[in-house]
Image (cartoon, rainbow, N blue to C red; front, side):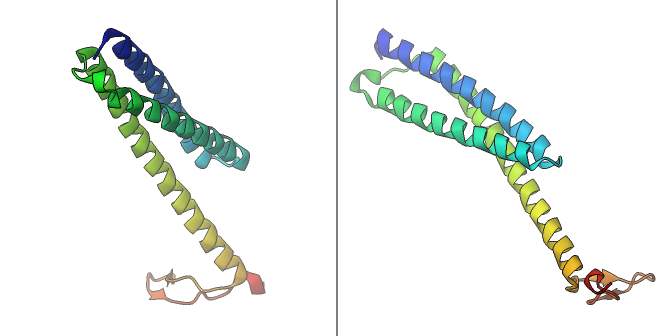
Length: 144
């Protein structure tokens, strides 16, 4: 790889690492918003996350273009180190995003359960005072 291409690739990887760090921070803020009670904060973090994913995708296309260059053979150790750093960051971001998705699914399930209770639909399994299960609640809130 010639010196100019190597410098461009190093610069691009540095920018990708910065964006990945911003994404990690946004995912942490999104997690906090998901466990809080502000729908606006969730929307704001989701919007920022989408913007960062889009920017990372554009940079990935640019990086692939640099690496597909026939003169790109022999990648320097500095590029490899940056690449490994980026991969580690993106792996943490993926895990954080999956955790946030799990939190969303749990919250959706809780909301569905609450709506079912208010509408008087029986819960899947209800326990009586003695710990025995039965399929229908004794009294629906919707009839109260």
